[in-house]
Image 1 (tube, rainbow, N blue to C red):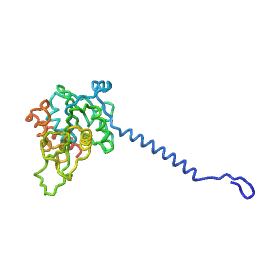
Image 2 (cartoon, helix red, strand yellow):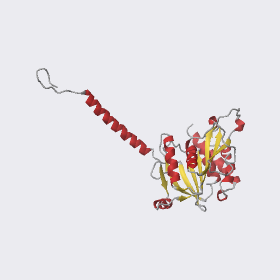
Image 3 (cartoon, rainbow, N blue to C red):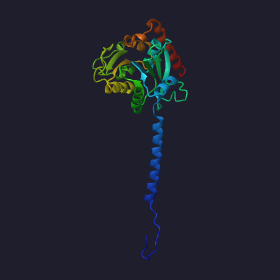
Image 4 (tube, rainbow, N blue to C red):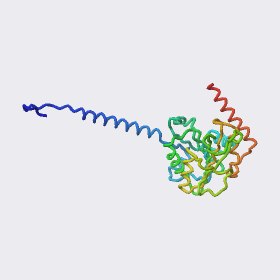
Length: 279
């Protein structure tokens, strides 16, 4: 800028400095966002046999995929099905978020999302999910898991825990009526569910909803059995409500129910002991 007398003066512009600071802040925010997105990415880790199969461009043969979401659903399958020696651990999923940080190490110890395969019927898979899958991770989880499975002829069964406080009804509900089971299925599911359908305006949410939506879009036979309970922790009565589902899971995974009742009690006792440690 020149003065009246022709003298040239340097001009200091605060606007230029603010633009540079804003650019630096935007770059830092973008870097933080990328790191957070990378950290929240769902990772699947398979055993060497399955990994070699996938590297060869093949998919995991699967005719029945059983997914248990929640501690009661997972404990039910552990007591009634996985208690036998007919299952191998074949993989795990890691999904880091603010409410779920377990199993993030290289060894996957303590992972709360584990895949099991039947030894005699390799096309039967079970998955336990006792960790929280965040909303922005649901699509990732379903796309990655089902992307590895051969979906032709596949039937998906989901067992899901839910609080009775989330159940909407015009009638009075006494404590003696809980827990209870409701079902929701995809259009491709032609079998008869073992319990009444979920009444409107009730909906399912979280991972069960994401899986059912994926199956509906891709014409996969799927049914969700949601157990509404007034008990938040592991409870043998709540677990027992899933028992009718055993008749629909196939002959190869049936077990002795009388022996498994003791297993349910053991899971509840272990949970109570762990809870008392913090009192």
